[in-house]
Length: 268
Figure (cartoon, rainbow, N blue to C red):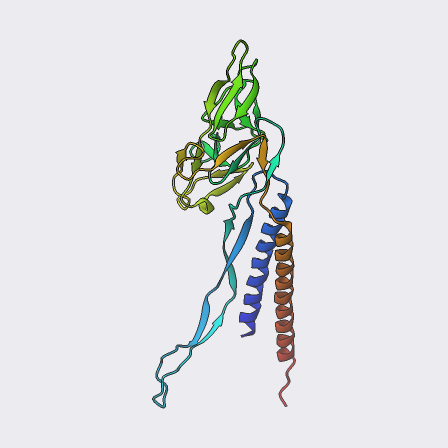
């Protein structure tokens, strides 16, 4: 039994370490635009069976309960939380927040099928005038939108239409249309870094729509979606994780002391 308690507590320490790592990453990204927090899900491990319930005993009675001893805990997975982040006005025309469901699509050759998905709407222009992400990779928005060098008053409409004033024109010119994509199970997306997600068999294939149609969110220009990390919730989770780590450490110490006493037994 001592070996079981040691292994069970060791699995608890390992699981709490994973939880601590996820919380640390959440808090590190508290100011990352469009970031979605994750949580760790746990499940109990295998069980050592010593007696089955419902088995007839020698006196003819049926055993009402079984006798099982658990072998610990394991991390079953990490789950993304796609609740809406708070809108943050920036005054920048190519800062775009999604109000509701959906993801921007960007050309990312190093991700999955070449298309990445993001909630981070901080966009800018590259040297060719293309609308690109303001991240370390500078992924190009898909469908591509190119802004002429002499354009002014760039505006992103709630339905995703991008317009600008061109020299000699009295009415805004439509430069392109931003489309959004979504998934049956967004929590099944693969997190690949640089604010990019990639589809998996668990997420399902992406389906594309115009903002505001068929359940897609609307766009809000001059605004960024803030990280949805709640520092208070994360700090409470951090305290719970620390205490659970301490409890499992104490069980290991108690088991070690029990084994030491057993080793010192003397026959008289």
